[in-house]
Every structure is written in C-alpha cells, then in structure tokens.
Image 1 (spheres, rainbow, N blue to C red):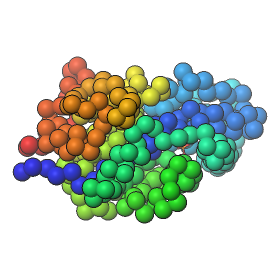
Image 2: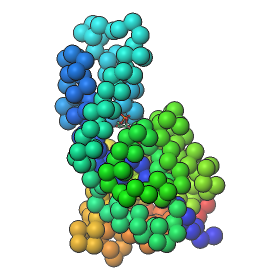
Image 3: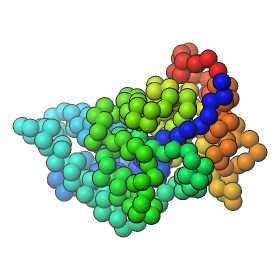
Image 4: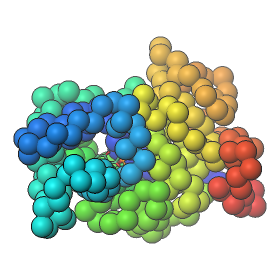
Length: 274
Ligand code: XBP
Ligand code: MG
C-alpha cells in the first residue's frame, strides 16, 4: 500500500524558528528581575534543554541548587510567576522582530498549502508564544493554515511524551504513517517516533549534539534552492533542499532511511510492515 503524505506536523521552538537563544535570554532577564543569582549560559542551557517546558526546566534547576536557594513556601506558585515574567520578556523580544522563521519553513508551508497537504503544530510551549512568533512572521490569516495547534495549554505532558502528536493525529483523523513530523531536539524526535510518525530533524547550536536515533532525515535546516542544506543523515535525492516531493518519497522508503539506533539500543520506531 503506497503511503500518501497527508499532513506535515511542525514543532515550534528550534524548528519553525531558532527561538531557544531568545528563550534563554528571557529566562536570565526574569532571574535578574527576581533577584536570583542564576545565569543560564549557552553551554548550561544546552544541557537544561533536556527538560521540555520552561516551568519544568526552572523547577528542576531550582531544586538542584540545594541550600544555595531558599525555597519559597509555595514553590509551584513561585515558578509559575517566574515563568509568566519570562514569557513577557520573550514576547517583547519576538514583537521587536528578533526571531525570523528558519530557512525553507515558509517555502515548505506554501508548497504544502498549494498541494492540499494539511498542516498542524505540536509544541511543548504555550499558545501565546506561538501566536507572537507567527503573528510577527506570517500573514494575519496564518491560524487558518494550521488545522490543529497543539500546545502545552491543551496537552499537559511534555515531549518526549508522544501525547501532543497523538492529539494531533486524533484531531485530524489521520494515521501516523500519513504524516511527517519536523523537530529540532532529542525530546522532540523521541515524541514523534513514539507516536509512530516519521521525523525530519533540523539541528541548531543547542541541539546539534543530540542523539537523533530513529530519525529519517537529519539536516541543518530545510534549505532553499539557492541555499543548500547540510545533510547529516538520510537522502535528499537530487535536490539540496527539503522539498515536498522528498517527503512523499521519505514516507514510501523511510524505513530504509532511518538512522541506525544508538549502539546497543533497540530501534525506537517499531518497523511497521512497509
Ligand atoms: C521547546 C520547549 C519550551 C521552550 C521554552 O518546545 O521545551 O519549553 O524551550 O518555552 P518545542 P516555554 O520545541 O516543543 O516547541 O518557556 O514556554 O516552555
Ligand atoms: Mg523544539
């Protein structure tokens, strides 16, 4: 049975746009404002990204500070307040136009819309963040382009849980093998694969060293016809940028394109009969 590509499902942070550096700066501004002696350097942030979700990331970091951090009586409420301020700073930086869509993202979205391929978003971040990012980078009608916008406001469990992807499949009435997921991180890749969806990874400075076992393609971006992308794993065929035609081929042949699982590890994606 030839699998026909029906939908593209996009992660947000690190995939639609290289947002993590601005997130990192927003976290540090919030820490300063709260009088906390915390500073998340790029090297530390790369490690902290092992935890999806800003609140979860800050909670885990705070609890690891031991005696040096005097825990407030209501830790949860404190972290929520800190995250609200961080999100305000993040939004201000996006509104200033600090973050553009990554290369090839708009082209791929336009190609998909022209060919009737459905679109969805699956992110561990909040709708407010997605709205500000896409309001500042796409025409005002962009919300109508994405059939499902699954965020942490709707799906509580964060990646690598597959929940956000399973929600998108359910809402769209699609099978996993009719879709391709675009991700940037270890957690994101694991979430897509655990939902049975083929994954295409676009790396960036904070995730280029992540383990992307099971991914069908690992690129340094989607590329453009005049701006070839670097292929770290998989086959792009004759083009040196990611085109819709490549994704259809990937769906048909991707079981042969998977990255071999990390030495000794079982293949993450159970191979469904081709
Ligand atoms: C990435 C995340 C988010 C961002 C920070 O989400 O894990 O936590 O790092 O945003 P995704 P928040 O890659 O799934 O889009 O502070 O709003 O969580
Ligand atoms: Mg991401």
